[in-house]
Image (cartoon, rainbow, N blue to C red; front, top):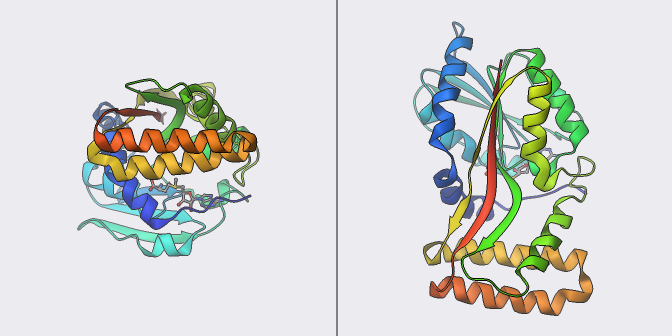
Length: 267
Ligand SMILES: C[S@@+](CC[C@H](N)C(=O)[O-])C[C@H]1O[C@@H](n2cnc3c(N)ncnc32)[C@H](O)[C@@H]1O
């Protein structure tokens, strides 16, 4: 089963995504890319780029001219992407990443990147992609992989059940084989190290309070749907949990942390 993502959902999550990204990785990223710089623009491929959120975050934080190749199977999402400023050109490639991760690469990348993608892919898919990326000496940055943590400032008796169901759902096939789900960032770091790369990994948690109630409500609705797929007999209880949690979040009675990790690897 392939995954489709709504443009409105990607728009809703973008401020939380950008706020979560760790500054600590940027300095290392710039240094790694500085060493790899050739005469032309910096060649970047963004896998599962959607409408270009990763481009909008990273391009202004990287120096010099850049050529971004955006790859996604959803032509409508790609169409919404635009170059975020002078000196940044974009190329859109519509293609199914699951079919062949290596075919998505041009072979010229200084940086292979992706955001909110790795939890969808399988261990084997990741191994093929990383072997190819490392083989050409590219720096690798995978941002915002969900790490399995859904933490509330004030507990509810069903929180653990919901978290467990979500993490089981995360591991189901999203079109790439059995998904890494919450193990994605750890697997990525381990594979890069095994390939001889240096690795830095940082938390990039979402912090959601009443100010992001719309994001929180959409997230909770999605969790209740996903959890009910893996535990259909618990659907009514999960629905009640979702209503209680969305209400508390909107009232400012509770805050939510959703665990994510960014992983950077370089030669
Ligand atoms: C969670 S979204 C993240 C989008 C974007 N990177 C962002 O941060 O907003 C995952 C993206 O992966 C794309 N995707 C999922 N499966 C894919 C596949 N088999 N081939 C290509 N793209 C895929 C989706 O279309 C979607 O744009």
